[in-house]
Length: 196
Image (cartoon, rainbow, N blue to C red; front, side, top):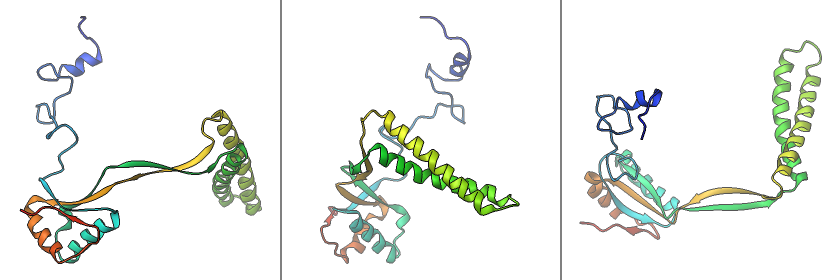
């Protein structure tokens, strides 16, 4: 094994005990706390209820806020996440050109307005020319971009994340107060967390 030289070696020389991370601001290597699955976001939390949809969980937090609970110590956590890609329609070269023309027209309108402000003559003609040129170039680029995919993706879609369940969590020291407030509220479909 050869010894490292150059900028990488200079960077590693500031580390302690052979690690590859530079020292932290205090001169010691800073390591993340917790189990290594992400940053610990403050004090420990307790789940006070689980709900089948987001509006129900939102209603719970809103109820807590209306009753003067410090909601800055609460969170809505979506679990069992699923990526859903909804297919919106078939994409053809003509449709890609049409969508590109629309986008190009907006950009051309913006450029036309920009030049139209500084035009001494007929500013409306400058705006219209910018709009038409933008639409033409947008259509060309849209059609070419779709043709370059080689038919691998002949549809349009929109992606979204959906959770199977939404848990409302609060800081552990405020859990009893939140449970008392929620005892007065009935949310359909809720699964309250076990109380101590």
